[in-house]
Length: 140
Picture 1: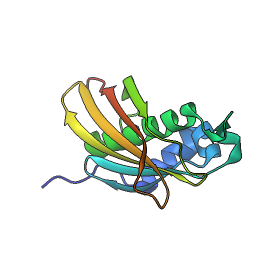
Picture 2: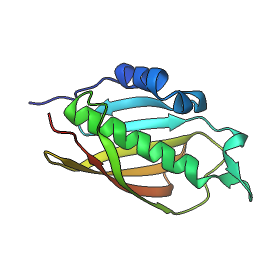
Picture 3: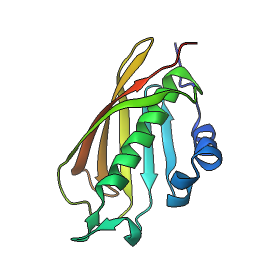
Picture 4: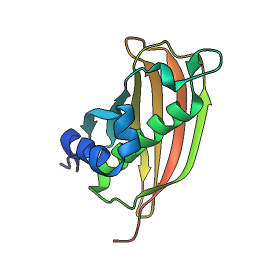
């Protein structure tokens, strides 16, 4: 039986120490399992775009950070695992609440990992965005 290779605390320490822009926005992991992760970003009016909705770059950043947590849950702390592709579909306007990202591994190979992330407003199951992405895993 395998287990997740990084804890919530370890991931949040990486965010705090090495991703200060994400830390300043309040990004934090709330759950990490093998091949899964849940991250949250607290609602802040500074994240809005004209029209009063959460900005696309904010949602993309949270989805990408969630994918990073997912891949580290599978391969351990490999800091040079990097995004090679990110695709996102914005489905509906998020509520003015915290934004939740739930990610899962679709396939993890030796050099590439493919993941999916669903984003929703806290307290709602309605999807506001769906992202898929590929990460490159450096040779060991």
